[in-house]
Image 1 (cartoon, rainbow, N blue to C red):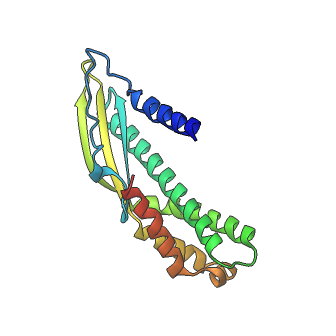
Image 2: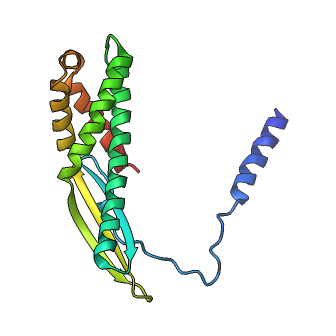
Image 3: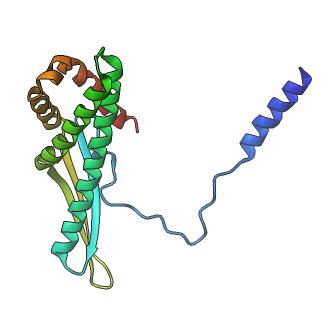
Length: 183
């Protein structure tokens, strides 16, 4: 018993003595544009930011937009994958592998189609000392087009339509989207 108490005290005091790495003297904290909470995904919207740098302003903007779209597509794809895995585990579906494979295929198509519904939230442009432009962009997309396009894709597959419970799917998607607010 005494050994357990001594071990616990050493563990607790050992943990307290650890310090976070210090900031080097002379370092400057930088603010990243478009990085506040309002630019993060939440229960209703997928959001992403991107930046690009170029000597041509239009090219810097294109790079930033492309980077943001890639980030958004990745976020939607990973969310849809998590939702489909949770949905398949939740439902009593005959051939889970076949349903999961077809569902992922439809999800990829939906992500590609849905990126047409992206809206620009905000932008910032800076000119570097060397004359190049640094362009920042924040984009967002409602989860509703994802659901609508997914439903349309599934409705074209008679076999999948039998196993698909739209209400339960939406509940699981809502749960996944709420996780964004807690990050």
